[in-house]
Length: 291
Image 1 (cartoon, one colour):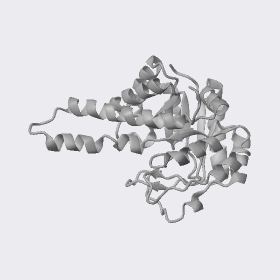
Image 2 (cartoon, helix red, strand yellow):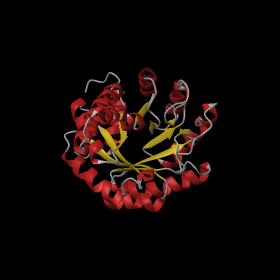
Image 3 (cartoon, helix red, strand yellow):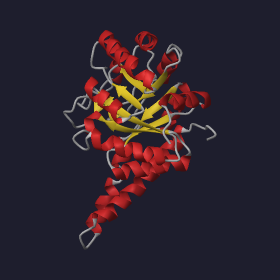
Image 4 (tube, rainbow, N blue to C red):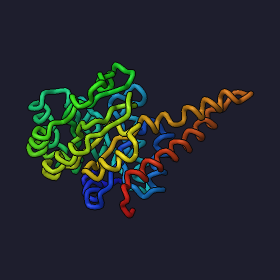
């Protein structure tokens, strides 16, 4: 069933757990991830990222996501992840997305605020939740796509979100989720993660009730994830580890087979692995909540 992001976030704050935000760029992932949400009784946002337009266009992805989301027993928000362009985000509105990340973090703070506030004024009356980002999110992805360039990971503290700026951003925009940088990395980590949980606590105390988001969940030790949730993180993007989980098993199946392997066999195998990995992650995101 489709549920507003705002409703999900309010319940997550009340019971001190976290909403998983997972990309579903194909039907296999979509079915597996929603099945995992139903199994664990956890609300979830299923995402289409603008950077995945070359994989599946939003005009194809979102109607399918809405169809499956409406039919699911889980609470589902159909979400756009990292919508960099205003026109793309407005296309998502017309297609029926229930929440949208309008990512203007590449701009100076004042323009980021102005752009996000303009978008919120348009879509909040429609009941659509809005996520924004403040601070630089480092990346370890082999891609030239905007938002996925490889970053210098030698000192992650240079990317941290500043508490004063976060407070001003939340107060002036009224955004539903503010994604902050506090030590996580898009993609996979180069070294052992060390999240600055104290920074999360400080920003959460100054965020005027705005929920805080974390991107780059993959590869973060689950103990640190739980500490971040307890400190105030209410939405976590977690995709790379789930999307790459089937690869070793599929490669083994192909290499060990004496005959050509039907794609349907690989698809079913991948679906089961994605389901199991997502169940594991969602149980961590419960953070002890009785759901």
